[in-house]
Image (tube, rainbow over all chains, first blue to last red; front, top):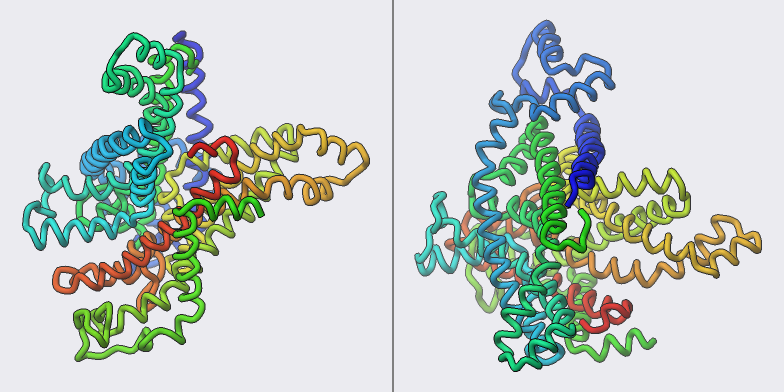
Length: 306
Length: 276
């Protein structure tokens, strides 16, 4: 891949980020009430102290100046300080991010494995009862409220059987949350992989592989699967959005630290700099993950120009 | 008619339609069939387990869970339907408007829609709740608004391909006004796509609004919305798992039924997906 399209693709990120950050900035300015009073959370202060706090937050400046300053600071990764504890928002997010990443990766791994099994079985034997069974299970995965399945998993495996811990941040405590997140991902993956397998199984190189006398097992695992995995893998970007969304809920159910719980808490406590920072950064991460996948796809499959 | 017949040929879709019809009927006549007042509290029935008098047991305040689930169907389904209606009406209008506007309007509009699609939907909905404040209808509005870019993008694409077809050119050539072309020629042809999209989105919308209520950002106590019921039962689920099992099962059944119908409907109406 030459350098020019790569650079253009990266430059294309800038207007997208600018639009999303403008939306975040605009949304936060639509919140009713004075941000300074929200920051002080009911503490009585003198007018002079109020004016000083306004100046410190910069909300006494004209709207356009505030906007430019927000975008300029955001580009440097500075989203201000939390109203709650005065810590820099970026620092708060950086502290919570590893936990969310662990959960997202755990959910993705379980989702991929389960989705692959269901999708492969359904795709190799399409249009029969096996296919119906697998695809209905996949649809069930997509229909399961992840917070409900999380509570059921806690009840059965932690409370009743006592097999797995729920609290803590070790690998064992990651299993149940990952499972509750992964079931949803598996539903979508299974459907994608099934359709992809059916497409690949109808192609000439599969017929050739069969004609060579290879066993069905080898044809499916060595020839079909490898090719069928490319389209679902390119959709990992969309899965990222699902994982982040799912993490918000899963972290709350399992009382795990993470960005999702930080965001929900911030909304409930009206800690707007944190809301602003989390939304702006997750959106930026989503945009960058998608660009990275596009570029990687271009490298793997030369027919695609990134 | 053939669409309905083809739907009826799929056992999954039939099962989905039957369950959905039952839930809708239940929601409609809930106050008549609910065995107890959904909000009647009782100290002596606190966390009472399942029994003949209370099939699904009682919650922390001694309220009958079955009665609350029956009445809650109105909130959970109502919110889901309101949500999809918001996404559909505004998303379709925006999609048609920018595609039909063409030129710079279309280029800028498409760019903004693409950027808005970069918000993970739940994050966008939470951002909107942060602005509007928590509450049942604010959550529905937030989920509805967060669905607008998705509807707008698909409607825009479909409108662009329709606008290039001969019958639209002909309607314009004989002097049809913009409004007439949109309402008489474009919208009827967009209907199948919009119906599929709406049905496919409804299950997710019900789930999504329940999720916001579960997080404490949507319906507030004592509203018997299913997500809010699960949130309220969270603390003492160890001692009274029935407070969590039944509202969740009701939510799952509803979403599964809608998804089964939506899945088959999209296969029937979209020839490219016939094989699914």
